[in-house]
Image (cartoon, rainbow, N blue to C red; front, side, top):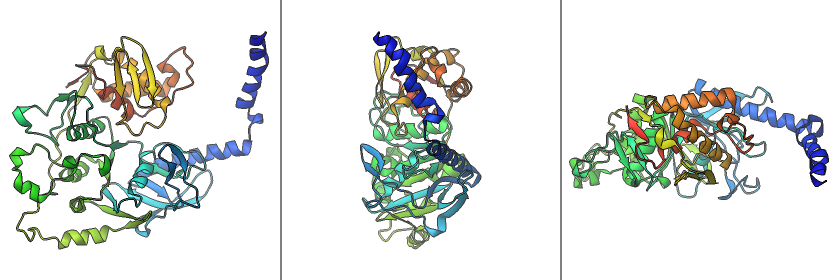
Amino acid sequence: QAAQQIFGNVLETLVVKALKYTSLNGTKLQSHVDCVEDQDWLRKQLEQQNLISFVCNGAVLPRLSGVDDRPMPSNTAISFKSPPQMETKFVLPNSKRTITGMGVPKGVTLICGGGFHGKSTLLAALQVGMYPKLPGDGREFCVTLSTAAKIRAEDGRCVNAVDISPFIDNLPFGRDTVCFSTEDASGSTSQASNIVEAIEVGAKALLVDEDTCATNFMIRDDKMMQLVAPEKEPITPFVRKVRSLYEDKGISSIIVVGGSGDYFDVADRVIMMDCYKCLDVTERAKEIVAKSSIVTQSGIQHDASSTMPFGTIRSRTPIGEPFKANGKVSVKRIDVITYGDIELHLSGLEQIVTQSQTAAIAQALQKIAALASSGKNTLPSVLDSLEEVLDNDGLDSLAPGQFNGGLARPRRLEMAGAINRLRRKGSMVQK
């Protein structure tokens, strides 16, 4: 009798209230759809305008708290205003509204300023700019290229057959860095791996915050270069590669930096956050660089930011067998998947924004064994095949017959990130 009540009355009522258009607020629904479509259109304009990101004037970037993603109240938050030198305008197709804001051009852009002045808050908005926002979020028209990857150090992660030699070479005891593997990466080796892996699968922009980076990977100043001979230092810091990364590979970078002016030497644009106000200080930064003598007053040659060629990105191939779960697969939380007899930790993938994406990644991983069974397909080609299935058949194709309503589509960058962090020996080999 209870089942009859549920299926005969309750379920029907719920379906009508949730899915029937006449039961919904039509004006509000149309406004929601229009807003999301306008965001998607705006994001697609970035490539045409040679931009990495766009932040609309009036946007509310600060969140309510570290565990609450709602916007800070308007009477507390300082709304965003673009520097005049970087203002760009767009006319949204649905609302016909003209919006003005900051266009961040391709190349190397620095976000600098004092502590607690809004540098990381701006970058945090940019790193989720590839996802649509709800109306009222405050960041609706803060958009970023869908191929932008947040990069950080990740001590302790595993690395499988990655060529980190563009950044790290000449390790003690002759350890190989052209095909580098470890179960316990350091800050610098993990950050190098994260960059190379992101580029391998198609990242076109890197988002970097010095607060979550390995210092010895980011900079090595002139005095230290004098003390520690080059043949004794295996790390080539990011500051010496970021310029060639753009000029040789077409990979842009947005870097939050507050502790090293050496990055001024290699930047195209320098933004300063001052009490949450955004200023373009590029000319001032270039003046500082120009006034700095090639040889410092102490007689030390200034080589800390001299650019070096980036190097090679080597293709890798996943091997199918290690990707068989051989046991239960479940999602424990947004950053942990139980995959058979191992736990897969994804905390280094900061652009996963919902546990539903993690659930989809857990299902996708189980497809890799079949897609990589030949041992001949590169990681990008395996991901291409997986995305083609998702494009054609939707998320239900990840778990046929399960009618799983709890999946959200992850980007290929996060799917690759999970593949790369699987602690199974022999899961990846170099071509």
